[in-house]
Image (cartoon, rainbow, N blue to C red):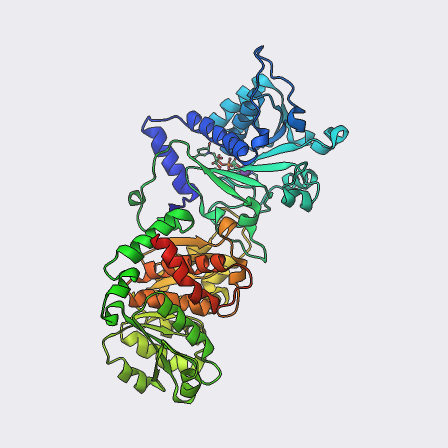
Length: 561
Ligand SMILES: NC(=O)C1=CN([C@@H]2O[C@H](COP(=O)(O)OP(=O)(O)OC[C@H]3O[C@@H](n4cnc5c(N)ncnc54)[C@H](O)[C@@H]3O)[C@@H](O)[C@H]2O)[C@@H](O)CC1
Ligand SMILES: [K+]
């Protein structure tokens, strides 16, 4: 788990560090530039060739190891540009042939960027944007590999990209193939903080200049993980790979910010630690289950199914709940579907739940402590049974039909929701329940920072008064109080094969199982989302929803190890 910082939070941290006297803005900029250079050499070690020249003049390293050491740095009008001037200088000191093109007005540069502009000017010329014809300049040497540094705009992007920068960029791009293949011989593109054109708070695309490597500072930002709209992955695709470099700002403490502002990313190894801790060390730990005699101590989940021919989704959810460690799982089926379900289940229990009255009766058993309604349920049954579930004040997951059934009058749902509920909408379901919020989210961005999926999920959770898990490659989970986590299955955690029929039903089951185990709603949603992707990654391509619960024990055993 790592904290994600918005542009405003990052500025505040930087400002506080400067005001404390521990560091100057100029030092931070220098460290940022050093971080970028370090990241470049870590990514492409073949570039790392330090100047051996003792005479003060950088040697000509253009053909060392058959590689050109040539960089073009594009500097913008703010501190992102300032970082670019530092990178240019550091590469020059290492013997690179560097050209800097500046988009902006030197007189208007912020002070630290201005200092670095001057430092570069003392070494080499700062070329103006209009002179940018890099391809033409190197026509004589088509084989050369150019390192292109995008230091145009970072966290300060406030509006659409200027068209002249986009046009210039397409001039740099020999072809989409060269960009994505990362083969030797293709130019390498490195973005400082963000590929220019990506909104750092929302990941939205303001005309992004895609890159091979994105180097950011101190902490990743939401825009590095949030997937933009429009059939592409927007910011995530443009970033391609994100490296976070420490610039000595210390550890940002979540406690310094209110829970409403705190945002975390649920990615990477650190997250595993937290899940292990919660699964293995909590009093109702999964692995203790086998030594405990009483299965009720691990909860009893009830998953309601739909009618005949519509029971598969609930069975998938039930299997998920069982595998994640609920002590008992009962499928509540309408009488007409009883035989169909009975033929298909073994470890699961079955109970006839025909109508509201039958459901109320069933819920008299206080041991039933977690409910799941929605998968394959049908709108009519959902409209009848969801109010019963909510009246019981049990921990409850509402998914699929249990959400869409209320699209014509979401208020009738909202007024019944309580803090023990988790809603798990995908994009379509979200738009049906929260049409105004979805409209704001999907409106084409015109100014930064743009309205993000984090903003939208927080607004939805506040309105609903419960936890909302907004699904997607970038799943965002928010509580009614505003705490929020992004669980993005992108970069090295990408699992595109998870987009398979029924995988959402299993996720609902995982959450329900963890609720039965006593997890708080948001923690249940976060852990389930993380495990869901781990299962998909462990299985790999060819995955079908049935595989997810079956591979879960392997993941849990690995966590225990
Ligand atoms: N905040 C921090 O702690 C640190 C910030 N650093 C760098 O500073 C950057 C942020 O600097 P700034 O706040 O100056 O912001 P930027 O340098 O990202 O951009 C701000 C400038 O771009 C202009 N601008 C914004 N959108 C535009 C558009 N679409 N078309 C034309 N002009 C546009 C603004 O008017 C302003 O002049 C970070 O991305 C990072 O690279 C680093 O030096 C390290 C420390
Ligand atoms: K940039």
